[in-house]
Structure formats: C-alpha cells, structure tokens
Length: 498
Image (cartoon, rainbow, N blue to C red):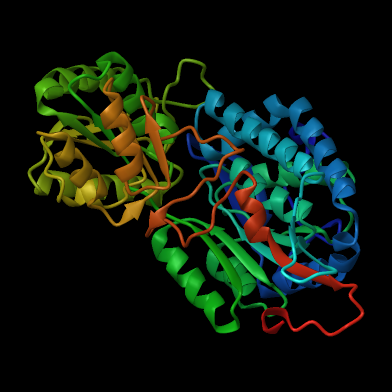
C-alpha cells in the first residue's frame, strides 16, 4: 500500500493489527515547513494501549525467541528489500513531517536499509565463545540469548534510522518489542513498521504505540513485563528514564545529548574544514546529537576561517526540504525554534559577537514554518553557555585558541562526550587527538557527523551510560550471555579446588 493513499487517520500496531487507541484521542502531525499541511492524525496513546502492546510482546516472546536466528534474519532481509524499493516515497514522507532536506531524508532511509541488512547478516553470525576448560573431560562455552521484551523510545530527528538502530538488533537477537516513536514524526515509524509487517514479521513481535512521553512513554518504563529499555533523547529526559528503570533493575540504554567540537589547526586544509563545519553545524538544521555547534580554530588561521565560514553560512538557502534548491530546512516545532531564539539571546547577553543570523525567518516564503537563520557567533569564550549547553539548532560558536593542548582542553571541558573532529595535516596531532579527545567518536579531516552502521555509536560522560548502538556492539545490549559447562568425566570435579 503506497503511503500516498494511506488513510489520514492512523492507528497503533498491536499484535499484528492496526488498532484504535483505547483512549480515542488523536494528535496532529503537521509539516514544520508549512503548518497548514496536515500530514496525518495519529493516536495519542495512553497506559492502556501500552499494556496491550506489552502483553502482545510478552505472548509472542517464546515463539520468536525459539525461531532460529537465521530465520529471524530472513524476515529482516525481506524488510530491507522493501525499504530499498520504497526509499524515495519514504524519504519524501519524512521531509514532509520532519523538515530536513530530501537529500538528508534519503540518507535517513538508507541508514535504516543499511542497519536492516547488517542485522540480517548477524542472524548467521551471532557468535559465542568456546574455550578450553581448566579441568579434564569438560567443555566450556558461552552463547547469546534474548533479553526479553524491549521498550524502545526514539526521537524525531532521525525518525527511521534510529528506530531501525533499536528494532533490528533487538529483533534479530530474539527479543520482542514495544516501540514509541517521537510524537513529531510518527509517519516514518509507520512506514518502517509496514515494511516489517509486509516482510512477514509474526504478530506481537513488534508493537507500536504513538503518543507523547508522559502518556505513552512513561508507562513503558513502569511496566513490569518490560525487561529492557533503550532511549534516545535529551540528557534531562534520559535521567528520568534511568531513574524509572532503576527500582526494578531494568536493563537500560541511554543515548543522550552532545556538545561536539571541530578543531581546526593552522596546517589544516581550510576549504575542507569550512565544508565540514558547515555540514556539521547546519546539516539537519543543527538538530543532531552529533552536530558541530563548536568550532575551535587556531589563531594563525582564525580570521581567515571565520570570514569564509560566515560568508558561506549567510549564503545557505533556507526553506522547504522538498525544494531541490533548499540547503537547510526548518526547526521541528515551535518549542525548538523558541529554544534556538533563547540561546541566541543568551549568546548576545554573554557578549559573544553575532556575526550572522540570529533571527527567526518570518517573510512570506517562511511565515508558515518554524524557520531560523543560520547563525554564527565569533570570538567566543569556551565557558560561555552557548559553548557549553546543547542548543539543537542552527547556531555555531567559533572559538580561537593558541596551542594544540589548548584545543584539547577546550574540547574536553564540557559535560558531554559524543563526537569530536580535528582538521590537520600533522599525523602526530591527529593520533594524539584520537587518543585524548574524551568522546565516543573521533573524526580526522571530517565533520562530527557521518557515523556508519557497522561501527559502535555512542558517547561518554552525560552523553550515554556505557552501551552502544550499531554494529555488533548493539548485540551486547539486546542479548544476555549464558555460559555452558558440560562435564563428561563421570566424577565430581570441584573447579579451582581440584
């Protein structure tokens, strides 16, 4: 069924069926580039819907967990094939509901494709360990087993990629799941769910409840039948999630905020660094956890870099993401736009120099959307709030520095630790930065965004709690280790005693 002909009123997906919310309430999904466009109406789910979804997941768990992993993987492979065929359609849907430009939403769908293919492959590579026992006539090994019912709570900025990061490893490991996507971008999760359903996923294995955090997200955290929770969002909400999981010792995975930096050394390829800083700072309208909202530039090239970077930022075309000429789309909603505007004022009050931007776009071409100018502050002190706090919008702070050691100190002196980048031709500086930057991801001569699905994704400090998305590292969260001993000696062997 093509989404162009899908009903404008959507339903939850529980036990293999599209069903009405038991509360009967709905929420509108509108285009952030044009508030007049109603993309669709989705359920405003409540605890009753969540209970039904969890019950379905629990009932489906045994059958799915006993399905051989290669067979589970075949369903994921078929889903990936569906996503490939419908990539353009799903990308256009995503631009309408999320706002980012079509090239980026195509990339978002492609990331879901890549993750689904990757995890389909892991169905035949879910390796354990076999090791010699310390005792004779005894074998020792370990295997992965499913962890149970997974509660998955995802954000709006990557509305198909991040659900795929969570769903695909959870499913291939043999877990069942209840997924609550962000209320701003439900259509992309609807499309992903349809692909899995059409691929033959058994009823109850994946259940989707639409709604907001307090009414639909919180009940997932509190439900005693949910064994593990994976959350992507702000650090503030992540702390609430962690506290809600703690009383019952739920396994909890948090992917939270970032205040990422690009370091530009005197010897860098400046044109390349400017390209990277523009993409890192203004890609997805700065609404990425890996966005490069800080750019630290060595003083020998600072003025030259700033002049060219500001000119390029001024020239960015802001508008509807479906327009092929648009380079930056809107903020996701009024609240996020207000946050951006608040931080611009904070920067001004802190006496950072506003070099370009700083205003909401309200002319005729932008009046119906949540648009903000690409904004650059210069000559920033690294202790300013705009250099310390996550803004999640199109605001970049330029920070001059003297030495390489100064750059490392500036980079590490924030409470987050997700992604960092250095532009340099000095191999010693590049290698030392990879070692000493306190982040989960480090790039050399590339911006802070652009993670690949076969490698671990995640951060340190207030960015995460030690788990990782993507790659085989994701399997560690969505499975438990079971250690197996077989003693065929026909006598009591008392391990270390004997």
